[in-house]
Length: 181
Image 1 (cartoon, rainbow, N blue to C red):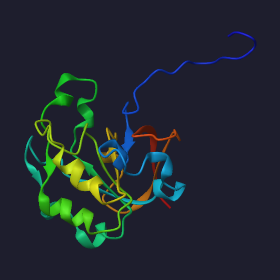
Image 2 (image 1 turned 30 degrees about the vertical axis):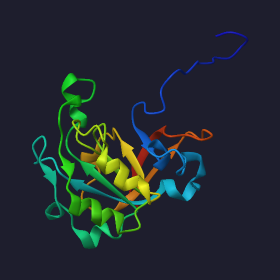
Image 3 (image 1 turned 90 degrees about the vertical axis):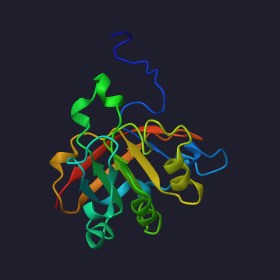
Image 4 (image 1 turned 180 degrees about the vertical axis):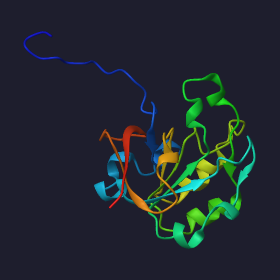
């Protein structure tokens, strides 16, 4: 301690640990994270259990109860990958949503989708096809590197993911929190 208090210097990328991406992550003139109202970061969530899928298999509508999903503000996909966090295998291939699931998301009023992996697109997709489809004309956020989704159950629950408010931000770390009434 110096001068009677402790102070910590933070030096990190905006995409560090669990973080949220707005459309400006991919498109220069789209919505930045600080332009979203606080209400965008809180609401009802539903976890979609995808743990039975193997690497590179598709997340399909068969896994989603669309009636229950339509009641959620956040769809969070549990691929079971957070158990590999801080291991080289975390950066291996993982299941990704197919076009039907992406279309379902784009045609609803979700505030955000989220995953327990490093991205929305397959590792091999350098074009970021799904990111571009999500962000081109929609103000839906994308959360990456979520942890402990297996603790959330399979019913709706309250969820928040407030980011650091940084001007013109293309991403920011969040503290994702789930709770039940």
